[in-house]
Length: 380
Ligand SMILES: NC(=O)c1ccc[n+]([C@@H]2O[C@H](COP(=O)([O-])OP(=O)(O)OC[C@H]3O[C@@H](n4cnc5c(N)ncnc54)[C@H](O)[C@@H]3O)[C@@H](O)[C@H]2O)c1
Ligand SMILES: [Zn+2]
Ligand SMILES: [Zn+2]
Image 1 (tube, helix red, strand yellow):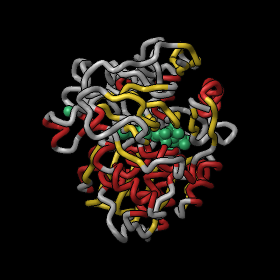
Image 2 (tube, rainbow, N blue to C red; image 1 turned 60 degrees about the vertical axis):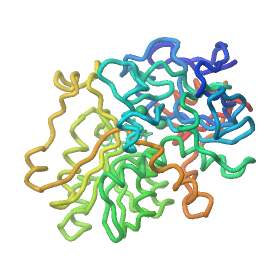
Image 3 (cartoon, protein in one colour; image 1 turned 135 degrees about the vertical axis):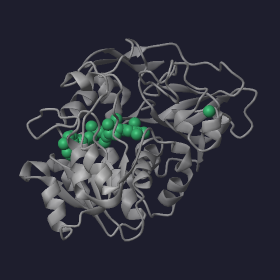
Image 4 (cartoon, rainbow, N blue to C red; image 1 turned 30 degrees about the horizontal axis):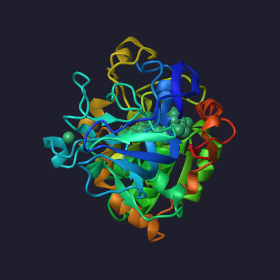
């Protein structure tokens, strides 16, 4: 079959690889209908991880079941499914308490809890930017979708970025009437903003520097804030009568930079501490790495990022971080899509065949040509 594989920094290729096979009784094989490119894939693409050459990429997958192992009882060939990016066993202590993103069994990597498809350090699982994908513990992991092709673009956002955006809002404690600042108008930030609205936020600011993405923030009925036009903390304090927002969401990650492109990994954390009111909540879903060979300074190479912790203490902020446990939210978010209440696909910019993945990675990485969110269709 054809699959997108990692070759070297700034280089991916579509190559022939062996088709996946059932390896355990609880496996299923799906034929991939949609697989998105994620901002997290760019960390690998840019050579900022330890991903091995030849890894099949892709953790945002959906498709149709074509084969099931003998232990599978909930799904059968022909079922249309969304695949959470987390690979989780369903029975370990963390899975049982709803933290599938920290499964104690799925990832053999020393010191790392939680598995994922096609990702550095997240276990031996191939990605789904391919014609077929093996899903371990499939009875537990798969989410059933209605048959057909309706809502394909919206459902494609259920494997990662819609639940992840929602997780940001959950970690920040967004409640009805709250004011919210979301940093990052990438796909995750935009869907965090959408989620904040779904949870009843009265006002949502979305902060970035790319005008095409800030325009999308308006499409989600939120207020864009451009960091190239001035200090976003001052802007948000002014707009909230000096009080600050109730909740802040970090959807940028360790490659946060100024409008000139200079990286400051602490920049967005400092801004959040500055603009969230005392006792407010902060949800950090942007990725920070314990090791980053390409970091801007020595400490950050070991994941030690100095930010305004003293101010955070003084303001009594609550903060939550980490990978999203997709299963905790995806069923409810699916139902909001089907009820017409949520439309995460508003940010999709491109739908392409698998062959065009190398070009799509390049353009998405350079943030040119309005490449906000790319859905690959391997079967096309
Ligand atoms: N926690 C999880 O489970 C999870 C899941 C998916 C993605 N992520 C992470 O979420 C982050 C965002 O993902 P994405 O797909 O939207 O990525 P993306 O790269 O498309 O978007 C990041 C956005 O941040 C903006 N940005 C950079 N510096 C900024 C600054 N100083 N202030 C404001 N905005 C700034 C960029 O211009 C860009 O629009 C990434 O770190 C990704 O790895 C986490
Ligand atoms: Zn993703
Ligand atoms: Zn588990």
